[in-house]
Length: 234
Image (cartoon, rainbow, N blue to C red; front, side, top):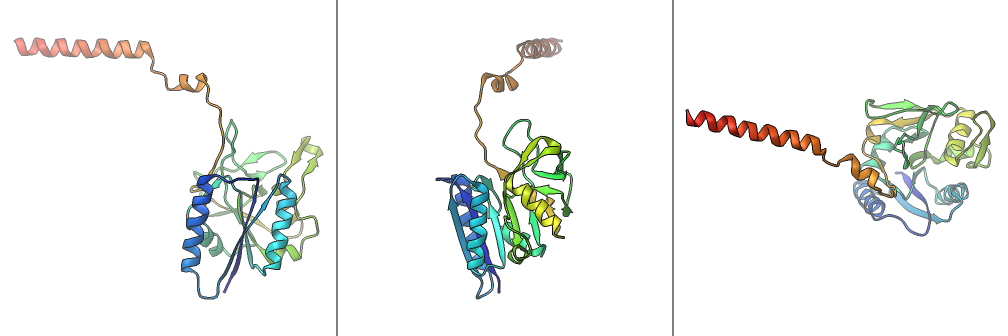
């Protein structure tokens, strides 16, 4: 028997796609789960993501959860996400996904200090990572008993002259306490990141027909028709 807590840090609303995927995944998992499996879906609304994650973990611990599945409310994911992640039986396993800004990169790093991204399209299986985003991450709840507070924080990295998010902070904290963080490359291929983009004429130009190419194609077609007509007259 397992006790699962799905934990979602959100703002006031979630996307339709996320709501759809969460409902389908929950129904599939709970419908196939052994008798006695406990299953909770927890939301904490707000804008302080580190605080939201901290509160969600505390909620899951009070519920007696064996596993916490963090899902960000701007993610899309397959119905088999939870069962596939549970099958790995790792302390921490996550999905890699694309960023929501151009140029598009990924949220998994082989070396975060050097911002060396890991790309999943040409990889399979599990790979240990230096850090990864928490948009879709499964964690064994017991590890939080071994980690000092705070579990999540926004902090400054002097060597890179940049701030690091609560997800990277958590990964580094776990590693400092002897735990490994993995990415599932196969599952990552089925996870998407919902974004908002302002479309401009520059984007329209990308697929705009080339008038010179169209003229050349027309001339070629007319020449072919002329040649074909000449053959028929012979």
